[in-house]
Image (cartoon, rainbow, N blue to C red; front, side):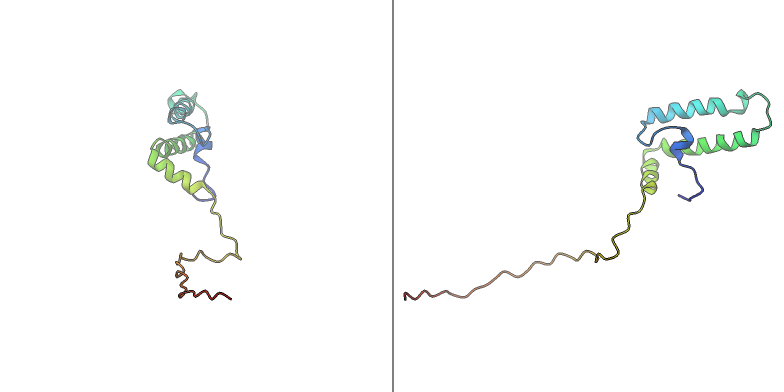
Length: 107
């Protein structure tokens, strides 16, 4: 996700843990508000059409569970490892401790 892109959940006005029904409801409400047929003639048609296109694109991603999961994974900040930590080493089994016969001498 590029830095200049707005969050898809913010575009639709829902929380990131919203259910699919809540996402669909928010999308339908937003479309009713922004649709050109429901608008009185105003000079801001280009910004409304841009917002309408952004809402449609956001809904297309968030309504599909697979695409939504991929988007959610891309939203998470990448946690870099601590610079002093070494990379994890593969597990190596240590050899069993072997001891020879033990002789007991009473003393």
